[in-house]
Length: 157
Image 1 (cartoon, rainbow, N blue to C red):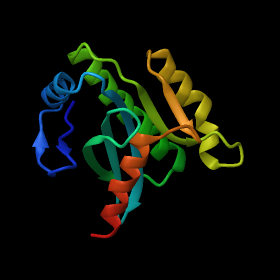
Image 2 (image 1 turned 90 degrees about the vertical axis):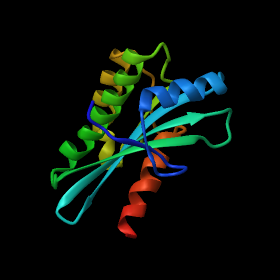
Image 3 (image 1 turned 45 degrees about the vertical axis):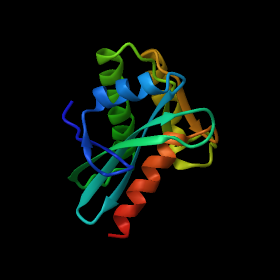
Image 4 (image 1 turned 135 degrees about the vertical axis):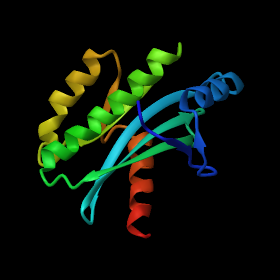
């Protein structure tokens, strides 16, 4: 995996696996949530994938990776890449640690009147078939909300 992850606390690059292992050793009851959001900004599509290390039900420690690529104008292709990036990170963590992922938060809506609804069945099916729990809106979406927050900050730069 070629993603460069940073801690949102200090914006410094980290070794994702070692960072998570150290964090879990210090806080054994942590749950791990992964999510990705994307936006077209200028001539690029920007993806932000977050790994949220959550203690209980109050906030979480956010680790993130930002990936830029030439603009993807097709809505479905852009959204599907969000699932691919989240799955890639989840598999990287589970293949390199004994840890379990609590959820992969898909930034899709279960409301059939929302455009992203058309991807819910396929994406949840794929994520679930890989052994992960998938969440969609309106379920709790801590990681995709964190990704959204970070990517919106890109607009303000």
